[in-house]
Image (tube, rainbow, N blue to C red; front, side, top):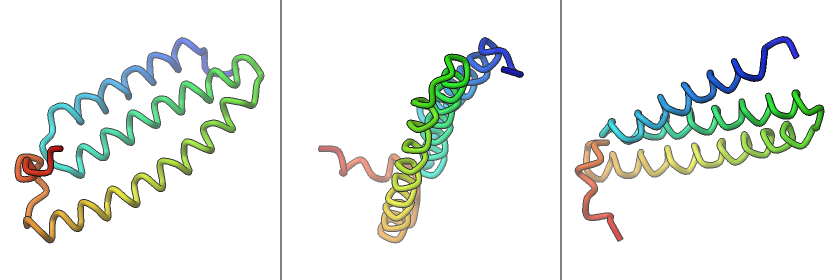
Length: 101
């Protein structure tokens, strides 16, 4: 393995933390979606690194499944954002308080 696994874990941890901060701090729906995507990519990075470290293909197959799932999630989420933007003329999370269950 060219890149040490510890470096990969540090990078994935930083990416996950940045994504988590984007989800927790931002009020814009699109920025929250980007934060979720960053966290999912960090998880995929760890899966690929672990797969390469232990010479198992399971992690890489799981990442391909994760990428397909993520693309479906993004398409549905962006459709919802466009719908909510047309309805309220904003993408601020605070404008959608009545959507709570």
